[in-house]
Image (tube, rainbow, N blue to C red; front, side, top):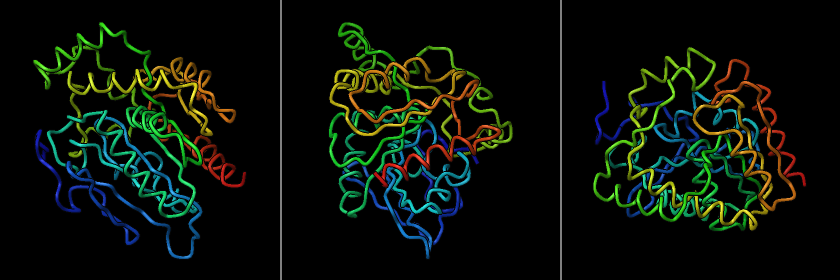
Length: 298
């Protein structure tokens, strides 16, 4: 079954079946969906991970894809709170039409609620979700145990003139796709089976980024780069050197410039965009989990 531009899944059959540890809530007024996976019975909860997916995907994809990140984090003692962007997954809205500035505000609200758990709160953002996570950190740098940026989209800041021109175009043709070359799906990850599953996934938005999305993303990009000197949270960035969707060198530049004294760029030579969908993702996953545990221990 194909998902149209405005269809929103309403039942579990439209995606991965939630486990018994699952709950969810919405954030008004847009009613974006936030999924919550608590730890399994018998596993003590040591921290909360706020997970933000990338453009075109959705939170529940991290149950069966991305090396089954959500259940693996649960097994390690991490409660996972994951947002579906507006226009993505189970959230309402035209498919793919996320306002990135608004997404940062949603992320901040989820962080606020997660902090009320009284546990350390970590942030994990992938791709465009990495940019949203970065925007959240620079907007409110407190109460963060650590930040993991997975293949984050962090292009150089755009000039004021360029940003103004982009906003004008977005106001005229907001849903028109930005005419830029799109890397083929087989450059998303090295696991061909994951690529096949993704191409057949009815919840995956497979079209390009619109001018509206791009214009709001640029606003967040500029805000993030302007505040790197205030970024003090422990930070781990993971990035593949052969990523065709988010530049590795930009991630390196970002890590170099943030003020945090506890920061690391974990580079995967020849790695594509989805590192946890590589043929051998265990090393990357273990590096992330051990880093999370080390932050708790310190």
